Picture: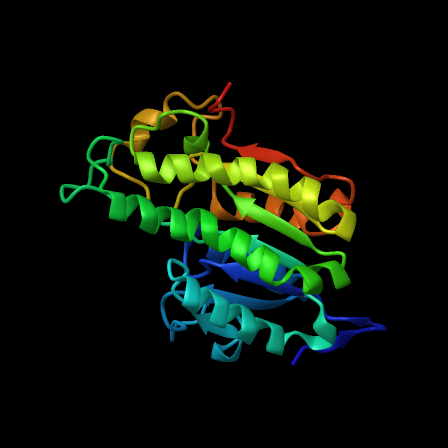
Length: 250
C-alpha cells in the first residue's frame, strides 16, 4: 500500500519494461523521488531487485496478448489507492533480429513478426492508457510513450517492424494528446538515440563518431527527462516528442 507524504498521497507510476536499461533507470529515478512504482514485464520479478519495491508491485504480463493485457489492467486498478494513477510510462518494446543478429528489413519480416512487434510496441500503450484513463484523469496524470530515433529515419540496426511501430507510436502520442487533454491528462513522447544499454548492437561505435557530443547517452539521462514529463515542471507540455540523442538527428 502506498503511504502519504505530508497531506498528499504518495504518487504512483506504472512502468512497462522495467527490468533493464532505460526502464531500470526510470524505476530508480522515480523511487528516489518517493514515488511508488508498479512495474509490468513478461518476466517474473528479478530476485536481484535493483530497487526497494518488491514483487508485490510487479505484474507479469504478455503485452503482445490482448487478454493478458486486459487482465493486467484489471489487476492494476485494484492496486491503486483512491483510484488514482499519476503517470504511465510505456517503455516496453521488442526489436527482433535475423538469426545472425542483423536488422530485419521490410522484405524479410514475416507478418507474424510485424503483428507481434506492433502488439507490444503500439497496441499495448493505447490499451493501457485507455484502460486506465479514469485513474489517470483522477490524478491529472501524465503518459509518456517511449519512441525512438529509428521512428523518423532508417537505422542501421533497428528493423523495419520496430522502426514503423515507433513512428506509429509518435503519431499516436499526438492523437492521444488531443483526445486525453480535456480529461486533464498530458501525453508526450521521448525519442532516445544511442543509449548505453545491453541491447546496443555491434558497430554502434561507428554511429558515435557521427554524434556531435561524441558519446552514447546514459539510461539516467533519459530517465531524468521522463521524470520531468511526469511532474509539474512540464505542466503545459502536451503532444511533444523530445529527442534525446546528443544532436544525432541534426
